[in-house]
Length: 255
Image 1 (tube, rainbow, N blue to C red):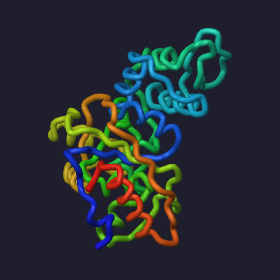
Image 2: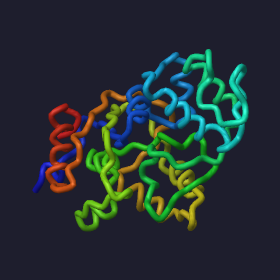
Image 3: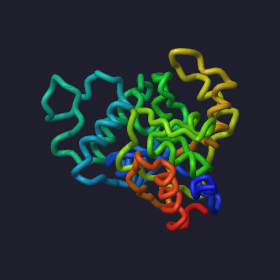
Image 4: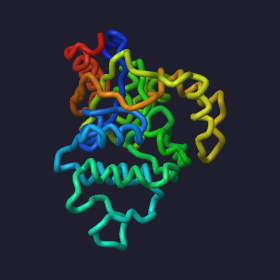
């Protein structure tokens, strides 16, 4: 059996797999519902590196205000969606976004976890329910970090990439066992309210939650660590999964 197959949770940790510079910049400081994360950044006057700040603000802009709706910033040019506020700090930019209406038609982002499947691009009024999902199975986090379909893997050990190729700059955010989890009945109610091409039934929501050892965070929490994963080699998928598993074990966050 491979190192990946043997991989298990360590010390009650939770895991979230994602990828990209902006994801890493955000999750290095907090993981949780996106409004809660934005408030955590604002209230603690946290910042992200210059190279990804515009992309990060754009992400929050999409998630918190109506897509294609105006964001009026004092002193900024008008006529387009604004993802930066000249003369304002990052915390001020987030504060501006947070003052917009809380309910918005969210776009899917790279941060969605358990509910993303190729045939189910979902959009719904659920602003606070982005960035929040975590797993107590480190293997699931690795699959999501690389963009591998969990159904294909767990049903037949097949490495099937959602986008036809592995995600670049994949990483795992590791959170402690002390994080607060939303009650399972409330979790199901949230998942069943998701709008998609077909109704998300309670049974399907439960299947996906069980498949991915899924939990929903109640608010933003700072991770214990961020683990960058090795670049995925499509010529040897199993070796790549094993290398990712070894990285988590070597860092002491899985066993």
